[in-house]
Length: 213
Image (cartoon, rainbow, N blue to C red):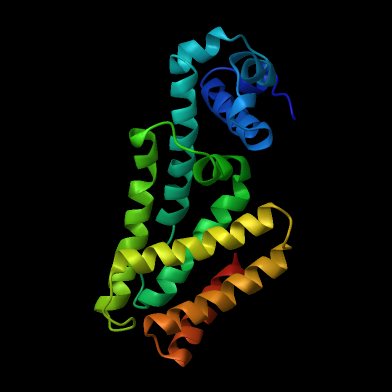
């Protein structure tokens, strides 16, 4: 595990460094490995810094989850609405993937560790709402058949999570993961009611955006 020096974590960066260290500890050693001393040692500071910035370990754990969802929200916010609701939805899926691969330790804490309580569990609400609204647009535009948008959003999220988890576990290469994700999304959109050719055209737009990035 990389140890952050005091120079790396001084000033306003100390809080972020503590969050990153806590996320890495949880992801690599499980919640049992998250102790005041382990986090402080990883950052090169004292345990008092955790109390100063968070008040204690439960608050630090909540901060880790909140930071994870804040970064996800930032990735999702970069997707601009166009006249192709299905392409926009697929781009949200790509943003979810990119965020997970950019923040693997935070991702594991967000989706592979149990929340502390209902308040902690509610941290995902805002990001799920973005996905829900995108699904509703696809239905309103006639691309998807009338359905429970929440159920479709959950299915789409589960698909993305499954592929991301396999890549993070190194069971799929990035090339395999993206190929599988693209194919599965097309099949899912067709099952939702989109015309096969329109679905493929929308996904081609997403691929073009990814190639240009």
